[in-house]
Image (cartoon, rainbow, N blue to C red; front, top):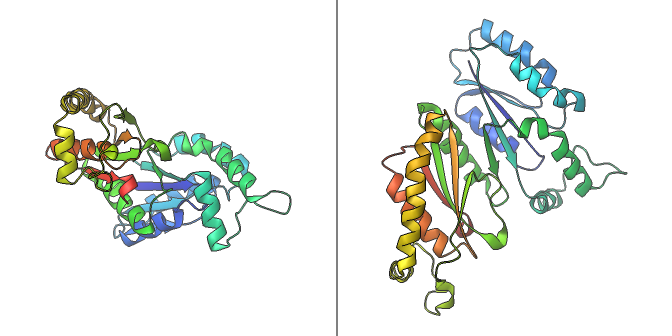
Amino acid sequence: MQLIIISGRSGSGKSTALHQLEDEGYYCIDNLPVSLLPALVDKASREEFGHFEGMAVCIDARNAWKDLANFGPVMDSLPGEVRSEILFLDAQDSALIKRFSETRRKHPLSSDTMPLAEAIDKERLLLEPIAGVASLTLDTSQMTIYELRDAIKQRLLGARSGNMSVLIQSFGFKRGVPTDADLVFDVRMLPNPHWVKELRLKNGLEDPVREFLEAQPSTGELYDDIRGFLDRWLPRYRDSNRSYMTVAIGCTGGHHRSVYLADRLFQHYRQTYPGIHIRHRELQ
């Protein structure tokens, strides 16, 4: 039986993820107490669920804190034939505060004595037992609902074929390193097209920027070094049964150098890894 557990902090997109899995044919349950998970799995294994792709349950901070602390032992107690994956969604504190402010929703942990910012921080601590064992972590700070739904389809469901799902993501250091990055490469030592007036408003996917960067000897040297590292070590990750891998390429603003190198790496690996995807965070 396929079991997907969705967790994460409130406002990070758990409902969107659960709805996407429901649309993909999963039997979905929201706000399941951790202590009831073994009984649910036992019942599902004994009944006919053949018309469903699998089961997806949302487990989050609405649980009792003692149940959350016991998450690891509960998962270990599930039968060996259960194929489980844990998707953990998160976002930067500022993004979560903005979302709650815009929707005027009440955070499940906030109260007259606990303000929103404190509730968000406490929720992170409560969910550490789940976040620490997650199969896939997604930072939704700068994702729209549609981008999150696409990420679920591409990264979580796309890995069903047994191939490792690889995401190559460009980003700007001035907006922070992606929290879900497994490997981070800093390319800020390359000449910056931002300081060329004619290139400032263009990005690394456009020919003038590409031509400028390819004219710099250091660009080819850095690309060869990164590609050589990934050529050697990505197969090792795959052979160790790793299902997901995020390779983040960062420059200062995330519009020129990182975009160019991320796209070049994506083009190089798209035949080797059928489950590869690309995202340019600052161009979204």
